[in-house]
Image (cartoon, rainbow, N blue to C red; front, side):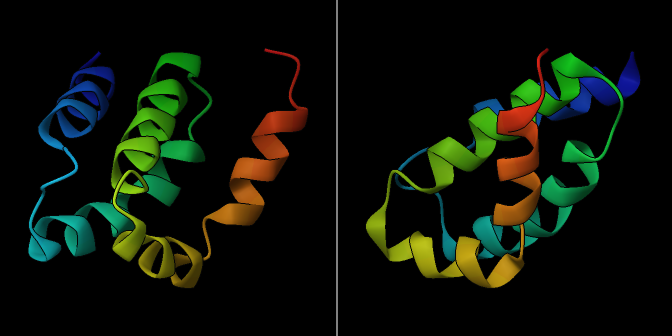
Length: 79
């Protein structure tokens, strides 16, 4: 699907050296991707989040985004 391709692309564009502008844009999209009822989209969104947090300086951005509770809910999900 288009959404799966977008999520995959976002997760693969990110790296430890992604500029702050990219991080700030993507972090706004990740909660929307995590809310989808599509395991592939959610998986790629979690990969994107993982890549963002490879850089310790980005941890604060992730925490402030409010995405952590959604990640915890997904960790409880059986799929």
